[in-house]
Length: 580
Image 1 (cartoon, rainbow, N blue to C red):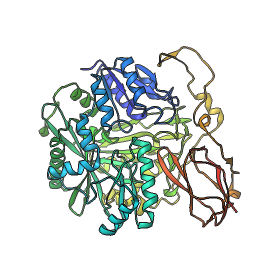
Image 2: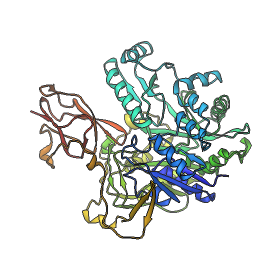
Image 3: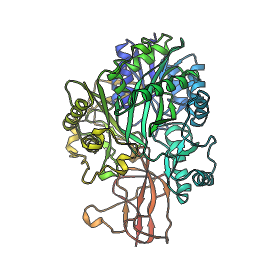
Image 4: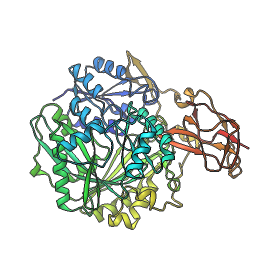
């Protein structure tokens, strides 16, 4: 077993791995950006080292900085978490060549399965068929148009490297192809460090069912059950559950066996998830995520297996602690993702900022996996997951009831969250009946009136923020016993050009002063001075928390002013375009 593990990640998943290390008697080593200097994962780790930088590219995707810290800290193994470098074969290979263990699949398996195009070929060789699509990297929007014309609209442009709905754009007609491809490539580059995309048919009313597998170096591959992840918006999951409701046992078994076939047939080792789309009694291979999934806790609660601990044991060369015959679902588990987003009647607007107060629910069958505490700040530069609320019940009805109760008890102040939308889903008859699909939230669920308020934003609340003095020696972080004024950094220091602040209140509506609703970075300007626009036309593209948002004209007219440039950081309420 390892004596030290470095966690090459941040937030909730870094906290999760640190706690598993502590239970196994392993020293945990954290890394952190400038903005995460005093974050929860840093506070909990046994050691912590500075990466420098603010954005993901400057910090958690800085290969050289992480490799240097691995050497300095003498880490024996690296856990990549999810996102960032978790599905990057070059990163895994670099670590392995250093003589350090990568807690995940071998680089060769990541290359085959992490590349969604080669993964389609690999699955087909194992007798598992996928959704109709291309097997080549998209070079231009013309290829998107040609595919849509041949197979019918809509189609989905997807990041070849990555997952979680990042870098995925649905195209409903030829006129949207060019902008959608550019947006998908930008998101993929930002989140995964690779911009390659491919295309496939977009099913009309599918369910998203995924199989958790675990494989060791002794030739054992086991599927641990399925998760239904159909409650999604922007192709990102809101609610996950296990077992899947209204799911035939024969299909469950066939899907599990297909997941094992794909994994074992491609030399896969460690934890992985094989994802499928299920519609009209048939299932299609979608992709394989060569890492631990965000929603792994629901599998843990119904299987009784600690997946992170099992990952570590497998990476250390131990055989699986269970066989296929040992796997049986006990009860029902549901997970809701609590993201720093305002549901805003279906718009789901990112809501970065400080968490002024956080109260998590407690009680039998309730679990909270979080990456923040009161006083911590959600940055626009990273994923907006505040935490995961997970419940277990003896059956699905009990689990739904328990989750409703837990959501009522959850209190997050300072930022808006998706909790009200989660509750609306759980209360809807379609979800209770288990007849929802991946498109149900956006096409059927009525979120009229469903919004969230950031809550207490009183400046005096900063008195409750933990204040530590931090010293770094050769890049390693140390806390010292001293009380000092809070050091404030972040997005403001990185701003290149600040836009003019918009006036607040009803008078700002339809004024032609187009303001952004949240903090973020301008990634594209869609209009020029003198252009004619109609109400609702997009004028700029704002990236916030790794999601692109079109900012639209609030009235028809002529563009008379553009207050930002591509790459500028803006704050909520900043006026970016003026229309007369």
